Structure formats: structure tokens, C-alpha cells
Amino acid sequence: MRKTSGWYVAILFLAATVLTAQESITWPSVSEQVSPLGEISLKAAEGHTVVAVARKPPGKGPFPAIIYLHGGLATTPVERLKDLALRRPNPSRYLAAGYVIVIPTFRSRQQDPQTRDALADCLTVVDHVKKMPDVDPNSVVVYGCSGGGSLALELAGEIRLSAIAAEEPATVLYTGMLSRNTPKRDTVFEASDAQPIMEDPKRFYTEEAQKFTREKIRKIACPILIVQGDQHIINKINNELFIPELKTQGKKIEVITYAGERHCFGFAGDGSPQAASRLFSDCQAFFLKHLPRRPRPIAESLIRWAPVQTQ
Image 1 (cartoon, rainbow, N blue to C red):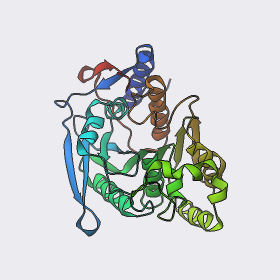
Image 2: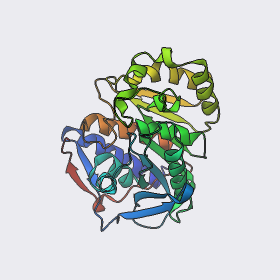
Image 3: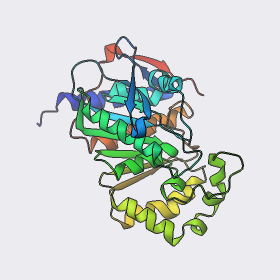
Image 4: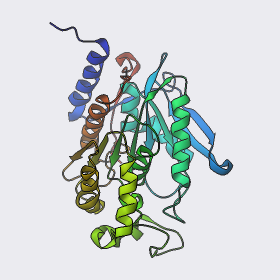
């Protein structure tokens, strides 16, 4: 009989605990005594300061790392980043599973949806994470939802990553279809300004946009997981245009759809608790196939399982 390695048994135990807890839907709360919260300030392009928060499993690395990218076009307050790292189910599930978790924010894209400022900030974060002493630089993954999902895809074409998972990526951004030339209702761009594009994407997917998109896809080297609900109109672009483009170019891609789920239901993990827990398990299984450095789950004695409070 083949001997099963210790890390694999631990991974299975954690997954089984998550699944067993589904009736009550719990999440692994890891105290700051076990895993202190750290704040990161980095210098990006033109002297801009990029802000992030980070937590690592106890003990000595190297560990794999996950960079967790929020959605939207605007910069997120640092208090929100801290809340995600300390009190939200899905980021905590990655920490408990044995990842260093890093949650950054980035410059706004509300004046120009096609600015590279946010991407430059994220590249600065990835570069920093790879140099962290407790991180295996060859075992870094990125997860992002909506606008963060678009950035995850951008990063996959700009820097070496083990894999990415994009939850309902805002491909109106990635494809260039939402730009400073798009009509907007107010003085800055909001997600609602992309509604006409999402409703009729083929009309806006011009030859120029197609060429722009295909050139960016061509540079993607890592495997991609697309996770999505079936309620948001962004899925029309992704299912009809973007995912077929990825497949046409032979990219390593998997797609998982969660029936009845809304936009970004899995990001924090407390909007639709059961589906979000399942999404974490699916992402974790995907990442494990592509990580050279396997995560080592935090000992059960250091975890307090708490009920998910639906937001």
C-alpha cells in the first residue's frame, strides 16, 4: 500500500471539516495571536504608495501565497482590507489551509477604466510577495472578483504565477470595451456605465477590441479557473466571447458555474455561505494541481470554527 504523505492527509482533513460543517456553515477563525495581521506599504510607479494587509500561517515557511484582489473601480479603505483578512470566511479559509494571504488595494480606475495604474500597483504587490522570506516565489496564486478578476487576468499575462482564479471577471475592462470614451452618468465611471456593453457585447467587441484582447490573452502562461454564478449580466460577455477566446488560443482553463448565485458571492464568503464554501473548495482543488509548494494547514487546535453570519 502506498504511504500517504502528511500534508495530503492534513489537506483532506481540512476539506472534510469544511464539508462536514456545511449544515451549520462555519469558517475557520484564526486569532491574531496565532497569525498577526501585518500592514504593507510599497512604492509603485511614480512614487505612489501601494497598501496591503497580510497574514501568514504560524511556523517557518516557505509557504505558498495567495493575493486576493477586490472588485470595483475604486480604491478600498485599509479598514476594509483588514476586515477581509480577519473576519471574512473565504480569505480565512485560505489562511487556515496554509497560505500566506495578501490583500491589497490599488489606484482608482474611475477616471479612466483603461489606466494601467491599478495593474502597476498589483505588479508591485506580486513582486513584493515573491520576495517575502516566508513565501515560495514559485508558488504564488491570484484570486480576484469582478474588477479584481480582470486584474488577475492582466497579471497572468505580465508576470509568472502558478495559477489564477477569476470570479466573474469584469472583462469589459480586460477587453478595452469600457474606456474613457464610454458615456458615463456622472463625473466618474461606475460599474453601471458598462450595462449597455454587457447587454449587447458583440456590438461593442469591435475588430480593434478583438485584436487588443487576443494579444493580451496570447501572453497568459498560467492555468486559469473561471468561477461564476448565473445571475449577473457580465457572464454574457464571459460565456459568449471571452471564454471562447481563451479556449481558441489553447489556454489551460476550467469553468465552474454555481446555479442561482449572484455577482461575487464567493469573494468574502458570507453573502451566500454554502455556495461560497463550495467555491473555496473548488478553487483550493484547482490551485493544488498547480502549486509546486503544497500548503500545510494550520493545526486544528489553533483554529476556532465560527458560524457564518450572512451579510
